[in-house]
Image 1 (tube, rainbow, N blue to C red):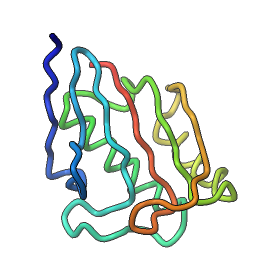
Image 2: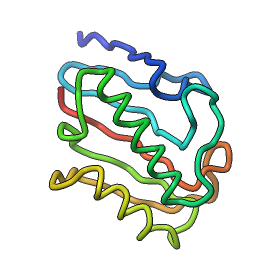
Image 3: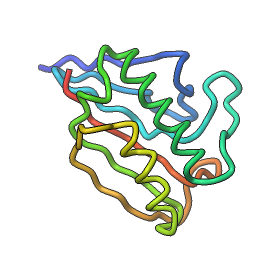
Length: 127
């Protein structure tokens, strides 16, 4: 039976519900969705989708690093947007952070995100 290991770090926002920041399962890492919360204050960061995506990517990078991984090991992401009108702005920030690495990805618009966020991103990475 595969052992699941919960990941906890102060460099990414604490879970605001009954879930783990990330779970290691064998050689895979499943990161919970990151919204633009400052990990120290737990307050929202950014007034637009681009600014919020910067914080989301920072949170995701910190969570990956705490798990022994990096953006270069991300195999798949899901982007949740409060509005598809923000797709280009989010895509620009996302692309800049990933550089030449291109994980598989889905992007969907949803009715609402936690705490009124404009963007949320989760990922699966290889360890």
